[in-house]
Amino acid sequence: MKNMQIHSTIKNISFIIILILLCSCTSEKNVKINFNTYVNGEKLEYGKKYVSPNGDGTFSIHDFKLYVSNLQLINSENPAKNYLEKDSYHLIKFQTNNSYSFTLNNISLESYDKIRISIGIDEEANLSIKSPGDLDPTNQMAWNWTSGYKFLLFEGLYSPESSENDLPLVFHIGFSENKKDLVFDLTTKDEIHFAIEINELFKNPNNIDFNELPRVLFNKEQAALIASNYLNSFIKLE
Image (cartoon, rainbow, N blue to C red; front, side, top):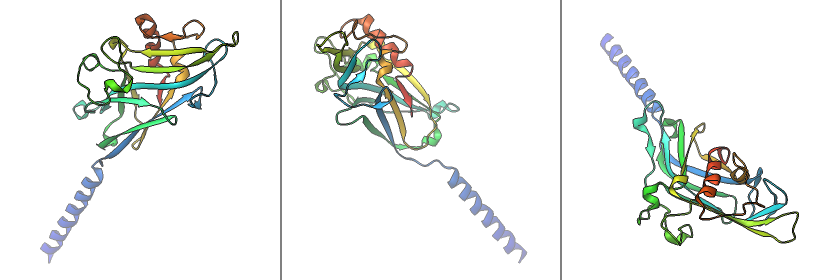
């Protein structure tokens, strides 16, 4: 009788241990990565007039897209568990609304405390003839005068107070040295939401006055001014 009680106790303890182990395991699931775009805190609407971020007048946006690449989920305590997405090149484009998303499959967000992304494309992929991920020369982001891709495309119209004529705004930012890496603390274990604030692209830390600089295409120094503004409040986790 005593042996039966001991055996029963051992079974119960074993069952409890198994339950604890099962509960402690992290669950894998598909994780959606969302990008929501704003202009001075308002949701992006193509064609709508917004107050100019610097200088006078108003501006409107007709097209806006950028490359986000090299997505990595980081486990600070055990870097060996870091997750690097394969063929991680995403063209974040906003065609019908202010949001864009893609999905990471079979991820345990509980295992990670940070997320790293790059705005732009690493030099090897930028100059390669291969087309992993969204690196497609037909997507209107490849340069037609040299090799490589535009990392960010912004097009619109500027309406200065001092003139009745609208001025085209064209900012095509590329060049391998303008890839910027951003790291964020993960506080969610579900979906990940990034907020893009377009005004910050033109004001932090470099103030861009549309009266003085309405176009950036091939000039490396001017492109670097815009790329430097990626690093502050242009993209945040919501």
